[in-house]
Length: 363
Figure (cartoon, rainbow, N blue to C red):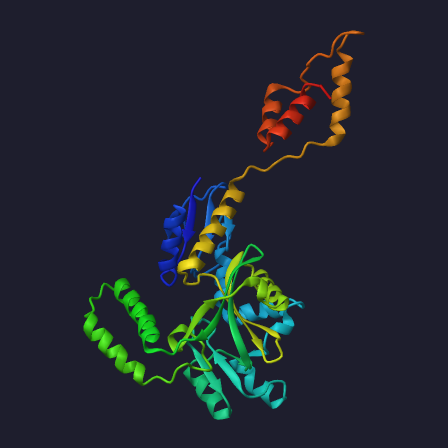
């Protein structure tokens, strides 16, 4: 049996950290010869078309990841869940947005997005028709009603539970901004085998920081003056937690980092689900812990329940072989092979003792 973590060029930094911690095989390509006992973890996997028969035991199927990467399709899947529909802001594709505005079914301000985007990229704030026309020209694929966000969160959902929660807080200090961009530049340089002079890089970043207007009140990304701060899951509104869990299920994923928010009325809104989020520190540790538990569960043999109705006939068959007045005899009621299969299904000493009593006709 082999356990694979299948990531992509955009998610391999965290994917590699997870694979090393879990001592499993990291790959960017579809694993060959997957058996029924193998486990495949999709971590932001990228495929060009759906896979008909992947095989094995799958966590975050690549087909579901591919579907979720199309953010317009993902919104439609979430909106289709009537329990979740009220937490999805109105949206429409670029080809029909003007008709929706003319019919008063949508109103400015709007947020334009690309169907495939990452972080705060591919976003346009549209206050009027001029902005809308320019956004479409520049590549916006769909538009969504603007949400008056008061607090934005990222809830990490795994197997139907929230394992960690953070909220976005202002990080408008020079040191924080430079550190975040340093990390991004270092990642680009490593992937492209480029050597960068540290003194020059830091000098330029400090100059660029002075030109920024931070924090950005529209795009709350870590590169625009925001950072994550952990929050207690128990202190979050139940409606927000339930919406995040439903969103992951709606897009067909087993785990995801859900970007969500509360507005001025404390109403929950789902923004998107990320199938391969960047992880560090405590968040990374939470995923490692969750994966270890899930892998152990998937490796556990399927238990076959012992039917209570078989106990009485078993006892009767054992009694039938005894002489009148004789001491109870230990008479097996099944063959050795069948008995071994049954013994393999038990998981505690008490269950084993009970099964032996049944097999030997002692009850």
